[in-house]
Length: 521
Image (tube, rainbow, N blue to C red):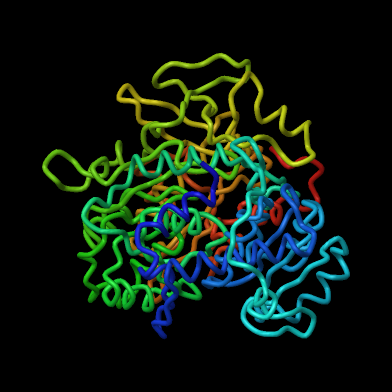
Protein backbone atom coordinates (compact mmCIF):
# COMPACT_ATOMS: atom_id res chain seq x y z
CA UNK A 1 0.00 0.00 0.00
CA UNK A 2 0.97 3.62 -0.55
CA UNK A 3 0.91 6.25 2.17
CA UNK A 4 -2.26 7.83 0.75
CA UNK A 5 -4.02 4.45 0.74
CA UNK A 6 -3.98 4.40 4.54
CA UNK A 7 -5.83 7.71 4.72
CA UNK A 8 -8.32 6.49 2.13
CA UNK A 9 -8.83 3.33 4.20
CA UNK A 10 -10.02 5.44 7.12
CA UNK A 11 -12.12 7.70 4.89
CA UNK A 12 -14.02 4.73 3.45
CA UNK A 13 -15.17 3.64 6.91
CA UNK A 14 -17.48 6.63 7.18
CA UNK A 15 -17.02 9.67 4.90
CA UNK A 16 -19.32 11.72 7.15
CA UNK A 17 -17.30 11.08 10.32
CA UNK A 18 -15.19 13.94 11.74
CA UNK A 19 -11.63 13.84 10.48
CA UNK A 20 -10.13 17.06 11.88
CA UNK A 21 -11.58 19.14 14.71
CA UNK A 22 -10.13 22.45 15.87
CA UNK A 23 -10.02 22.50 19.64
CA UNK A 24 -11.47 25.74 20.96
CA UNK A 25 -13.75 26.55 18.02
CA UNK A 26 -14.97 22.98 17.34
CA UNK A 27 -14.82 23.71 13.61
CA UNK A 28 -14.71 20.29 11.95
CA UNK A 29 -13.98 18.73 8.58
CA UNK A 30 -15.34 15.31 7.68
CA UNK A 31 -13.32 12.57 6.02
CA UNK A 32 -15.30 13.13 2.84
CA UNK A 33 -14.51 16.85 2.79
CA UNK A 34 -10.80 16.32 3.43
CA UNK A 35 -10.56 13.54 0.87
CA UNK A 36 -12.21 15.66 -1.82
CA UNK A 37 -9.88 18.53 -1.04
CA UNK A 38 -6.82 16.26 -1.41
CA UNK A 39 -8.08 15.04 -4.79
CA UNK A 40 -8.72 18.57 -6.06
CA UNK A 41 -5.33 19.76 -4.83
CA UNK A 42 -3.59 16.75 -6.42
CA UNK A 43 -5.27 17.65 -9.70
CA UNK A 44 -4.13 21.24 -9.20
CA UNK A 45 -0.54 20.08 -8.86
CA UNK A 46 -0.89 17.99 -11.99
CA UNK A 47 -2.38 20.93 -13.90
CA UNK A 48 0.58 23.07 -12.86
CA UNK A 49 2.94 20.54 -14.43
CA UNK A 50 4.10 18.66 -11.34
CA UNK A 51 4.49 14.93 -11.67
CA UNK A 52 5.51 11.85 -9.70
CA UNK A 53 8.86 12.15 -7.96
CA UNK A 54 8.87 15.94 -7.74
CA UNK A 55 8.97 17.41 -4.25
CA UNK A 56 6.56 19.52 -2.24
CA UNK A 57 6.40 20.81 1.33
CA UNK A 58 4.00 22.37 3.81
CA UNK A 59 5.00 25.18 6.20
CA UNK A 60 2.29 25.62 8.80
CA UNK A 61 1.32 25.20 12.43
CA UNK A 62 -1.07 22.32 13.18
CA UNK A 63 -3.89 22.91 10.72
CA UNK A 64 -6.44 20.73 8.91
CA UNK A 65 -5.76 22.31 5.54
CA UNK A 66 -2.01 21.90 6.01
CA UNK A 67 -2.42 18.19 6.64
CA UNK A 68 -4.76 17.90 3.66
CA UNK A 69 -2.09 19.53 1.48
CA UNK A 70 0.60 17.07 2.50
CA UNK A 71 -1.86 14.28 1.66
CA UNK A 72 -2.45 15.97 -1.70
CA UNK A 73 1.30 15.99 -2.36
CA UNK A 74 1.56 12.23 -1.89
CA UNK A 75 -1.75 11.60 -3.73
CA UNK A 76 -0.18 13.30 -6.73
CA UNK A 77 2.74 10.86 -6.53
CA UNK A 78 5.09 13.58 -5.34
CA UNK A 79 7.55 13.41 -2.44
CA UNK A 80 6.57 15.12 0.81
CA UNK A 81 9.51 17.12 2.21
CA UNK A 82 8.97 17.71 5.92
CA UNK A 83 9.77 21.15 7.36
CA UNK A 84 9.18 22.01 10.99
CA UNK A 85 7.46 25.39 11.53
CA UNK A 86 9.55 25.82 14.70
CA UNK A 87 12.82 25.64 12.78
CA UNK A 88 14.75 28.81 12.11
CA UNK A 89 14.07 30.26 8.64
CA UNK A 90 17.72 29.61 7.73
CA UNK A 91 17.37 25.88 8.41
CA UNK A 92 14.09 25.51 6.53
CA UNK A 93 15.51 27.37 3.53
CA UNK A 94 18.46 24.99 3.54
CA UNK A 95 16.14 21.97 3.67
CA UNK A 96 13.85 23.23 0.93
CA UNK A 97 16.75 24.12 -1.36
CA UNK A 98 19.05 21.14 -0.81
CA UNK A 99 16.14 18.67 -1.05
CA UNK A 100 15.03 20.29 -4.34
CA UNK A 101 11.53 21.32 -3.28
CA UNK A 102 9.40 22.88 -6.04
CA UNK A 103 6.03 23.42 -4.31
CA UNK A 104 5.31 25.08 -0.98
CA UNK A 105 1.94 25.25 0.73
CA UNK A 106 2.11 27.70 3.62
CA UNK A 107 -0.02 29.24 6.36
CA UNK A 108 -0.47 33.02 6.42
CA UNK A 109 1.39 33.08 9.75
CA UNK A 110 4.53 32.63 7.60
CA UNK A 111 3.66 35.25 4.99
CA UNK A 112 6.53 37.48 6.09
CA UNK A 113 9.01 34.67 5.42
CA UNK A 114 7.87 33.91 1.87
CA UNK A 115 9.83 36.70 0.18
CA UNK A 116 13.03 35.40 1.77
CA UNK A 117 12.18 31.81 0.82
CA UNK A 118 11.56 32.90 -2.78
CA UNK A 119 14.98 34.52 -2.86
CA UNK A 120 16.87 31.63 -1.24
CA UNK A 121 14.97 28.77 -2.88
CA UNK A 122 14.38 29.89 -6.46
CA UNK A 123 13.48 26.38 -7.64
CA UNK A 124 10.10 26.66 -5.84
CA UNK A 125 7.73 27.68 -8.62
CA UNK A 126 4.35 27.23 -6.92
CA UNK A 127 3.32 28.84 -3.63
CA UNK A 128 -0.18 28.38 -2.20
CA UNK A 129 -1.46 30.02 0.98
CA UNK A 130 -3.65 27.48 2.76
CA UNK A 131 -5.91 29.78 4.80
CA UNK A 132 -6.37 33.04 2.88
CA UNK A 133 -5.16 34.90 -0.20
CA UNK A 134 -1.50 35.66 0.31
CA UNK A 135 0.35 38.73 -0.84
CA UNK A 136 2.51 36.47 -2.98
CA UNK A 137 0.33 33.43 -3.63
CA UNK A 138 -3.26 32.36 -4.28
CA UNK A 139 -5.47 31.01 -1.53
CA UNK A 140 -5.86 27.23 -1.49
CA UNK A 141 -9.62 27.28 -2.06
CA UNK A 142 -9.25 29.68 -5.01
CA UNK A 143 -6.47 27.58 -6.50
CA UNK A 144 -8.46 24.33 -6.41
CA UNK A 145 -11.91 25.78 -7.21
CA UNK A 146 -12.00 24.63 -10.84
CA UNK A 147 -10.14 21.35 -10.29
CA UNK A 148 -12.06 18.07 -10.83
CA UNK A 149 -12.93 15.60 -8.08
CA UNK A 150 -11.92 12.64 -10.23
CA UNK A 151 -8.80 10.79 -9.14
CA UNK A 152 -5.86 9.93 -11.34
CA UNK A 153 -3.19 7.28 -10.94
CA UNK A 154 0.29 8.84 -10.71
CA UNK A 155 1.83 5.44 -11.35
CA UNK A 156 3.76 5.20 -8.10
CA UNK A 157 4.42 1.90 -6.34
CA UNK A 158 5.98 0.35 -3.23
CA UNK A 159 9.59 1.28 -4.03
CA UNK A 160 8.94 4.91 -4.97
CA UNK A 161 10.11 7.57 -2.52
CA UNK A 162 7.16 9.28 -0.83
CA UNK A 163 8.83 11.03 2.11
CA UNK A 164 12.05 13.02 2.48
CA UNK A 165 12.66 13.91 6.09
CA UNK A 166 15.52 15.96 7.50
CA UNK A 167 17.56 14.35 10.23
CA UNK A 168 18.04 16.35 13.42
CA UNK A 169 20.34 19.26 12.70
CA UNK A 170 21.76 19.31 16.24
CA UNK A 171 25.00 17.61 15.16
CA UNK A 172 25.63 19.39 11.88
CA UNK A 173 23.99 19.84 8.49
CA UNK A 174 20.68 17.96 8.20
CA UNK A 175 20.66 14.93 5.92
CA UNK A 176 17.57 13.83 4.00
CA UNK A 177 16.30 10.36 4.89
CA UNK A 178 14.38 8.94 1.92
CA UNK A 179 11.40 6.73 2.71
CA UNK A 180 9.44 4.72 0.20
CA UNK A 181 5.81 3.64 0.27
CA UNK A 182 7.08 0.25 1.43
CA UNK A 183 8.96 1.65 4.43
CA UNK A 184 5.93 3.74 5.38
CA UNK A 185 3.76 0.62 5.04
CA UNK A 186 6.06 -1.14 7.53
CA UNK A 187 5.53 1.76 9.93
CA UNK A 188 1.75 1.27 9.76
CA UNK A 189 2.18 -2.49 10.16
CA UNK A 190 4.22 -2.02 13.33
CA UNK A 191 1.88 0.58 14.79
CA UNK A 192 -1.31 -1.34 14.04
CA UNK A 193 0.21 -4.45 15.59
CA UNK A 194 0.92 -2.51 18.80
CA UNK A 195 -2.04 -0.19 19.36
CA UNK A 196 -5.58 -1.56 19.35
CA UNK A 197 -8.89 0.31 19.23
CA UNK A 198 -11.35 -2.50 18.67
CA UNK A 199 -14.36 -0.89 20.36
CA UNK A 200 -14.36 2.53 18.67
CA UNK A 201 -12.11 4.68 16.45
CA UNK A 202 -9.43 6.63 18.34
CA UNK A 203 -9.61 10.30 19.24
CA UNK A 204 -6.10 11.65 18.75
CA UNK A 205 -4.87 14.89 20.29
CA UNK A 206 -2.42 16.73 18.03
CA UNK A 207 -0.54 19.20 20.20
CA UNK A 208 2.99 18.25 19.13
CA UNK A 209 3.91 19.38 15.58
CA UNK A 210 2.28 17.27 12.86
CA UNK A 211 5.40 17.58 10.72
CA UNK A 212 7.23 14.95 12.75
CA UNK A 213 6.36 12.10 15.12
CA UNK A 214 3.04 13.65 16.08
CA UNK A 215 1.92 13.64 12.45
CA UNK A 216 2.90 10.02 11.92
CA UNK A 217 0.84 8.97 14.92
CA UNK A 218 -2.06 11.07 13.61
CA UNK A 219 -1.90 9.11 10.33
CA UNK A 220 -2.53 5.90 12.28
CA UNK A 221 -5.59 7.43 13.93
CA UNK A 222 -6.90 8.52 10.54
CA UNK A 223 -6.29 5.09 9.01
CA UNK A 224 -8.58 3.69 11.73
CA UNK A 225 -11.30 6.22 10.97
CA UNK A 226 -10.47 8.25 14.07
CA UNK A 227 -10.59 11.99 14.51
CA UNK A 228 -7.67 14.34 15.10
CA UNK A 229 -8.14 17.18 17.58
CA UNK A 230 -5.93 20.08 16.54
CA UNK A 231 -4.15 22.38 18.96
CA UNK A 232 -1.78 25.18 17.91
CA UNK A 233 0.89 24.49 20.53
CA UNK A 234 1.86 22.36 23.51
CA UNK A 235 0.08 23.97 26.45
CA UNK A 236 -0.63 21.80 29.53
CA UNK A 237 -3.84 23.64 30.41
CA UNK A 238 -5.20 23.36 26.86
CA UNK A 239 -4.16 19.70 26.67
CA UNK A 240 -6.00 18.82 29.89
CA UNK A 241 -9.13 20.67 28.83
CA UNK A 242 -9.16 18.97 25.41
CA UNK A 243 -8.69 15.48 26.89
CA UNK A 244 -11.76 15.91 29.07
CA UNK A 245 -13.89 17.68 26.47
CA UNK A 246 -13.19 15.39 23.51
CA UNK A 247 -12.56 12.20 25.51
CA UNK A 248 -9.12 11.82 23.93
CA UNK A 249 -7.94 8.21 23.77
CA UNK A 250 -4.65 8.52 21.86
CA UNK A 251 -1.84 11.05 22.08
CA UNK A 252 1.88 11.61 21.62
CA UNK A 253 4.20 14.05 23.38
CA UNK A 254 8.00 14.21 23.69
CA UNK A 255 9.41 13.90 27.22
CA UNK A 256 10.02 17.64 27.63
CA UNK A 257 6.33 18.35 27.04
CA UNK A 258 5.34 15.51 29.39
CA UNK A 259 7.49 17.03 32.14
CA UNK A 260 5.63 20.32 31.72
CA UNK A 261 2.31 18.47 31.85
CA UNK A 262 3.31 16.64 35.04
CA UNK A 263 4.24 19.95 36.67
CA UNK A 264 0.99 21.69 35.66
CA UNK A 265 -1.68 22.30 38.31
CA UNK A 266 -4.31 21.62 35.62
CA UNK A 267 -3.15 18.00 35.34
CA UNK A 268 -3.89 17.37 39.01
CA UNK A 269 -7.59 18.10 38.42
CA UNK A 270 -7.97 16.47 34.99
CA UNK A 271 -9.92 13.30 34.21
CA UNK A 272 -7.57 11.15 32.12
CA UNK A 273 -9.80 8.05 32.15
CA UNK A 274 -10.45 8.21 28.38
CA UNK A 275 -6.74 7.68 27.54
CA UNK A 276 -5.81 4.32 26.06
CA UNK A 277 -2.31 5.05 24.73
CA UNK A 278 -0.01 7.90 25.73
CA UNK A 279 2.98 7.50 23.42
CA UNK A 280 6.34 9.07 24.20
CA UNK A 281 9.70 8.95 22.46
CA UNK A 282 12.56 11.01 20.98
CA UNK A 283 14.46 11.02 24.31
CA UNK A 284 14.69 8.81 27.41
CA UNK A 285 12.58 9.44 30.50
CA UNK A 286 13.71 8.92 34.08
CA UNK A 287 11.95 6.00 35.86
CA UNK A 288 10.70 8.32 38.61
CA UNK A 289 8.96 10.51 36.06
CA UNK A 290 7.44 7.47 34.37
CA UNK A 291 6.03 6.35 37.71
CA UNK A 292 4.54 9.82 38.13
CA UNK A 293 2.99 9.45 34.66
CA UNK A 294 1.44 6.08 35.47
CA UNK A 295 0.05 7.42 38.73
CA UNK A 296 -1.45 10.48 37.01
CA UNK A 297 -2.49 9.20 33.58
CA UNK A 298 -3.07 5.52 34.33
CA UNK A 299 -1.49 2.38 32.80
CA UNK A 300 -1.36 3.92 29.32
CA UNK A 301 2.29 4.91 28.78
CA UNK A 302 3.86 3.44 25.64
CA UNK A 303 7.43 4.18 24.63
CA UNK A 304 8.39 3.96 20.97
CA UNK A 305 12.01 3.86 19.88
CA UNK A 306 13.20 4.72 16.41
CA UNK A 307 14.71 7.58 14.45
CA UNK A 308 14.21 9.53 11.25
CA UNK A 309 16.10 6.89 9.27
CA UNK A 310 14.06 3.95 10.59
CA UNK A 311 10.67 5.47 11.37
CA UNK A 312 9.51 4.44 14.83
CA UNK A 313 8.77 1.99 16.31
CA UNK A 314 11.58 -0.47 15.78
CA UNK A 315 11.29 -1.23 19.50
CA UNK A 316 8.56 -0.44 21.98
CA UNK A 317 7.75 -0.66 25.67
CA UNK A 318 4.03 -1.42 25.88
CA UNK A 319 1.71 -0.15 28.64
CA UNK A 320 1.84 -3.64 30.17
CA UNK A 321 5.66 -3.61 30.11
CA UNK A 322 5.57 -0.49 32.31
CA UNK A 323 3.90 -2.49 35.07
CA UNK A 324 5.02 -5.13 37.56
CA UNK A 325 2.96 -8.35 37.91
CA UNK A 326 0.97 -6.77 40.77
CA UNK A 327 -0.14 -3.89 38.53
CA UNK A 328 2.14 -1.31 40.17
CA UNK A 329 4.76 0.60 38.15
CA UNK A 330 7.72 -1.61 37.25
CA UNK A 331 11.16 -1.13 38.78
CA UNK A 332 14.09 0.74 37.25
CA UNK A 333 15.42 -2.36 35.51
CA UNK A 334 12.35 -2.30 33.27
CA UNK A 335 11.47 1.38 33.05
CA UNK A 336 14.96 2.28 31.80
CA UNK A 337 14.42 0.04 28.75
CA UNK A 338 13.33 1.29 25.33
CA UNK A 339 11.47 -2.00 24.87
CA UNK A 340 11.57 -5.13 22.83
CA UNK A 341 11.75 -5.46 19.07
CA UNK A 342 8.67 -4.34 17.15
CA UNK A 343 6.84 -7.07 15.17
CA UNK A 344 8.19 -5.97 11.77
CA UNK A 345 11.81 -5.17 12.65
CA UNK A 346 15.07 -6.81 13.67
CA UNK A 347 17.37 -5.35 16.32
CA UNK A 348 20.83 -6.42 17.42
CA UNK A 349 23.90 -5.16 19.26
CA UNK A 350 27.08 -4.79 17.17
CA UNK A 351 30.69 -3.91 17.90
CA UNK A 352 32.85 -1.70 15.69
CA UNK A 353 34.08 -4.69 13.64
CA UNK A 354 30.58 -5.75 12.61
CA UNK A 355 30.34 -8.64 15.07
CA UNK A 356 26.93 -9.17 16.67
CA UNK A 357 27.14 -9.30 20.46
CA UNK A 358 25.33 -11.38 23.03
CA UNK A 359 22.98 -10.49 25.87
CA UNK A 360 24.47 -8.03 28.33
CA UNK A 361 27.29 -6.91 26.02
CA UNK A 362 27.45 -3.19 25.20
CA UNK A 363 27.68 -2.06 21.59
CA UNK A 364 25.79 -0.09 18.98
CA UNK A 365 22.10 -0.80 18.41
CA UNK A 366 21.60 -1.79 14.77
CA UNK A 367 18.39 -2.39 12.86
CA UNK A 368 17.08 -4.34 9.89
CA UNK A 369 13.61 -4.17 8.41
CA UNK A 370 11.48 -2.74 5.64
CA UNK A 371 10.90 0.49 7.59
CA UNK A 372 14.55 1.46 7.08
CA UNK A 373 15.18 4.40 4.76
CA UNK A 374 16.24 3.88 1.17
CA UNK A 375 19.26 6.08 1.90
CA UNK A 376 20.24 9.70 2.38
CA UNK A 377 19.26 12.02 -0.45
CA UNK A 378 22.26 12.54 -2.77
CA UNK A 379 24.67 11.41 -0.05
CA UNK A 380 26.05 7.95 -0.91
CA UNK A 381 28.98 8.26 1.50
CA UNK A 382 26.80 8.78 4.57
CA UNK A 383 24.35 6.15 3.30
CA UNK A 384 27.16 3.58 3.09
CA UNK A 385 28.41 4.53 6.55
CA UNK A 386 24.95 4.19 8.09
CA UNK A 387 24.36 0.78 6.49
CA UNK A 388 27.75 -0.85 7.13
CA UNK A 389 27.76 -4.63 7.57
CA UNK A 390 24.20 -4.87 6.20
CA UNK A 391 22.52 -3.23 9.20
CA UNK A 392 21.36 0.34 9.83
CA UNK A 393 23.51 1.94 12.51
CA UNK A 394 21.50 4.04 14.95
CA UNK A 395 24.42 5.69 16.74
CA UNK A 396 22.86 4.60 20.03
CA UNK A 397 25.01 2.59 22.41
CA UNK A 398 23.19 -0.05 24.43
CA UNK A 399 22.65 -3.68 25.32
CA UNK A 400 19.97 -6.37 25.30
CA UNK A 401 19.00 -8.35 28.40
CA UNK A 402 18.11 -12.04 28.52
CA UNK A 403 14.40 -11.23 28.14
CA UNK A 404 14.96 -9.37 24.90
CA UNK A 405 14.58 -5.84 26.29
CA UNK A 406 16.92 -3.23 24.84
CA UNK A 407 18.58 -0.51 26.91
CA UNK A 408 20.20 2.66 25.59
CA UNK A 409 23.14 3.79 27.66
CA UNK A 410 24.15 6.73 25.48
CA UNK A 411 24.70 8.14 22.04
CA UNK A 412 28.10 7.33 20.55
CA UNK A 413 28.97 10.99 20.40
CA UNK A 414 27.84 11.68 23.99
CA UNK A 415 30.17 9.29 25.80
CA UNK A 416 32.42 11.07 28.33
CA UNK A 417 35.96 9.80 28.86
CA UNK A 418 37.02 10.97 32.32
CA UNK A 419 40.22 9.78 33.92
CA UNK A 420 40.45 7.05 31.28
CA UNK A 421 37.01 5.66 32.15
CA UNK A 422 33.94 5.70 29.91
CA UNK A 423 30.88 7.33 31.47
CA UNK A 424 27.51 7.32 29.73
CA UNK A 425 25.84 10.69 30.18
CA UNK A 426 22.34 9.18 30.08
CA UNK A 427 23.09 7.14 33.20
CA UNK A 428 23.97 10.27 35.15
CA UNK A 429 21.04 12.23 33.72
CA UNK A 430 18.54 9.62 34.90
CA UNK A 431 19.77 9.95 38.48
CA UNK A 432 19.61 13.75 38.40
CA UNK A 433 16.12 13.65 36.89
CA UNK A 434 14.97 11.64 39.89
CA UNK A 435 15.42 14.73 42.12
CA UNK A 436 12.00 16.12 42.95
CA UNK A 437 12.97 19.67 41.96
CA UNK A 438 14.49 18.81 38.56
CA UNK A 439 12.49 19.40 35.39
CA UNK A 440 15.24 18.23 33.00
CA UNK A 441 19.01 18.12 32.69
CA UNK A 442 21.92 17.48 30.36
CA UNK A 443 25.28 15.96 31.28
CA UNK A 444 28.33 16.77 29.16
CA UNK A 445 32.09 16.42 29.33
CA UNK A 446 34.07 19.64 29.77
CA UNK A 447 37.86 20.18 29.56
CA UNK A 448 39.78 19.47 32.76
CA UNK A 449 43.53 19.37 33.39
CA UNK A 450 43.31 16.47 35.82
CA UNK A 451 40.54 14.31 34.33
CA UNK A 452 40.87 15.16 30.62
CA UNK A 453 37.10 15.52 30.60
CA UNK A 454 35.17 16.38 33.74
CA UNK A 455 31.48 15.55 34.11
CA UNK A 456 29.30 18.64 34.19
CA UNK A 457 25.54 18.72 34.81
CA UNK A 458 23.39 21.51 33.40
CA UNK A 459 20.07 21.50 35.22
CA UNK A 460 16.66 23.07 34.58
CA UNK A 461 14.48 23.20 37.71
CA UNK A 462 10.72 22.97 37.97
CA UNK A 463 8.97 26.33 38.33
CA UNK A 464 9.04 27.48 41.94
CA UNK A 465 11.36 24.66 43.05
CA UNK A 466 14.95 24.85 44.27
CA UNK A 467 18.03 22.68 44.59
CA UNK A 468 21.73 23.20 45.21
CA UNK A 469 24.74 21.91 43.34
CA UNK A 470 25.81 19.98 46.44
CA UNK A 471 22.44 18.18 46.53
CA UNK A 472 22.79 17.10 42.91
CA UNK A 473 26.37 15.90 43.37
CA UNK A 474 25.52 14.03 46.58
CA UNK A 475 22.56 12.31 44.92
CA UNK A 476 24.79 11.08 42.10
CA UNK A 477 27.55 9.94 44.46
CA UNK A 478 25.05 7.92 46.50
CA UNK A 479 23.72 6.09 43.45
CA UNK A 480 26.64 6.04 41.02
CA UNK A 481 29.78 6.59 43.07
CA UNK A 482 32.28 9.43 42.95
CA UNK A 483 33.72 8.69 39.50
CA UNK A 484 30.40 9.17 37.72
CA UNK A 485 29.19 12.08 39.85
CA UNK A 486 29.36 15.55 38.28
CA UNK A 487 32.38 17.64 39.18
CA UNK A 488 30.29 20.78 38.67
CA UNK A 489 26.63 21.75 38.31
CA UNK A 490 25.16 24.71 36.44
CA UNK A 491 21.54 25.81 36.64
CA UNK A 492 19.70 27.27 33.63
CA UNK A 493 16.19 28.73 33.46
CA UNK A 494 15.62 26.73 30.27
CA UNK A 495 17.83 24.21 28.47
CA UNK A 496 18.43 24.89 24.77
CA UNK A 497 16.21 22.63 22.67
CA UNK A 498 15.68 21.83 19.01
CA UNK A 499 12.41 22.45 17.21
CA UNK A 500 11.24 18.96 18.17
CA UNK A 501 12.12 19.39 21.84
CA UNK A 502 15.46 17.58 22.04
CA UNK A 503 18.06 19.11 24.34
CA UNK A 504 20.91 20.54 22.26
CA UNK A 505 23.86 18.92 24.02
CA UNK A 506 26.19 19.95 21.23
CA UNK A 507 25.35 23.61 21.87
CA UNK A 508 25.96 23.20 25.59
CA UNK A 509 29.17 21.26 25.11
CA UNK A 510 30.64 23.63 22.51
CA UNK A 511 30.35 26.53 24.94
CA UNK A 512 32.80 24.86 27.31
CA UNK A 513 35.26 23.75 24.61
CA UNK A 514 35.78 27.10 22.90
CA UNK A 515 39.45 27.79 22.37
CA UNK A 516 40.43 24.11 22.54
CA UNK A 517 41.84 22.50 19.39
CA UNK A 518 40.30 19.13 20.26
CA UNK A 519 36.78 18.57 21.57
CA UNK A 520 37.79 15.59 23.71
CA UNK A 521 39.93 15.39 26.83
